[in-house]
Amino acid sequence: VTCIETLSSCLKMYFEGNPPANQFLCQAYLCQGQLKSPPAFGSVEDFEEAVMCFLKAIEISKNEPRYHFMVFNASVLYFQTVRPLLQPGRCINLIPSFRQVVQSLEEVADQDHTWRAELMMHLIKCLADSGKIDDAISFAKVTEELIKSHVAHLYPRLFTLMVNKLAPHIKPITLSKYIEVLCFNCYRRDIHSIVFILQARLKEIGRLDQWLQTAVREGDPQAVQAVCATQWRFCLPLLQHNLRKHIKTPLLRVAQGLEDIQSMLLDMRCQVHSELAVTEEEEGRLEASLTHLEKAMLLDKGTDQKRLSLRLMQLRGTLCQTPTRTEDKAAIEFKPQDKTDIRPTLVSVGGLLGPDDFQMVLDGDSTSTSSLGSGPVAQLSEKAQLHSTSLQKLDGHLARQGSNTDSILWAALVKTARKHEVWDVCRAACRFCLLYDDGRWKISKADSKLKNESQDWCCNESQACVRDLLRLLAEIHFISAEVFAPYQLVDPSNV
Image 1 (cartoon, rainbow, N blue to C red):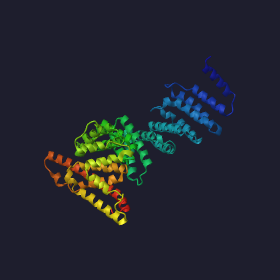
Image 2 (image 1 turned 90 degrees about the horizontal axis):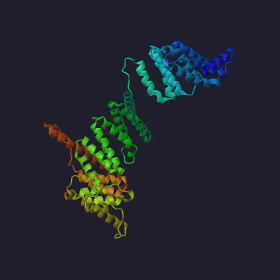
Image 3 (image 1 turned 135 degrees about the vertical axis):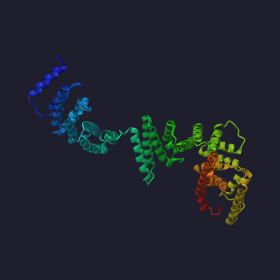
């Protein structure tokens, strides 16, 4: 005698004794249902016999609160049994019992919302495959409310199911297409956002980073490009020296994703590599920074500014060589230093860019007083004279130096001094850098009317370089206002 035969005999004897409706009767029905479960190729009638046992156990369990856990157990066994019928043509026979199981779980307020949502989505699929579209749409609304309230992570699956099953005339949506919709929603929320909150922005960036990885796995170039463009927009406000570290990894994935699909968004790819180069440089990773600069230069056809930046990085990476040009020596001095050592380095760079002139302007900017004048009037007079003499040195600086590339190095000195809060060096460097804002660079509208294509290309490249230089000088003007305003409030004699 086998165990199954013994179990069948025991259940038969138990049911013949007219047992009371309690937990043991429920367990007996569950055992009987499993015994009667047919193989996957069994007939619908065989499945219905097993299903009836599970439904009887559910009806008994839901009437007594202490037996409510049996409803969940019965629903699991029910689903395991009827799973072979979850296919078009056969699932129509499951709809009544499926409804009863789902309704019973709701009546006992079962707290496993993930399981309930799974069963409800299977019921939607059964209704749709059986041609009951109206019932499926109605039940999908109920399912949507449950998922939104308790298990929001399942909403993408419900959304895909609704589109694929409830809109048969619409092309089935793919995961990559759904990601594009999510990116559009992120973009729409961002343009209507008024307050910038760092943690909220970083959370959105993290979510976009996950979507990008999914789009890459799906192999859809259009979705990858959409996520990258959205991610770049979200990262733009964080491109500051104290915030860059938070977005380095997402930007690396953006750069790699666009490179893998050979995206034609060349301008964005160039900007991403340029910003990554700055980030790597701030962390002292010169080789990685050099790699990003080389890629950026290739993507933007190698404008003069990118070539200069590349040259500076190459110089910093080859410290064993002794450069001959003053500008190259200054570039090497910009090698990342500890904050405690940065002031002597910055002064040294200023001295290389403006021999004699820079030190005099720096001394004229000093707030210390001399011992020659004992009274306040004498001290103010001496300071004013020293300040005036130092400014006169600025007048002939460009004529003595005559280098157009110095403006970039002076701007780098300004930004570095500001970053490390070396304010006197920053003010002095601002004075020298703004000497180059003498009207020599202008964007000409007439140049864009050249008929020759090669001349037109050269003109566009030249104008792009001019725009970059003017933008850089405008940035230095803002920094100058920032560092001079509090300085003049403390000492009005320095104008």
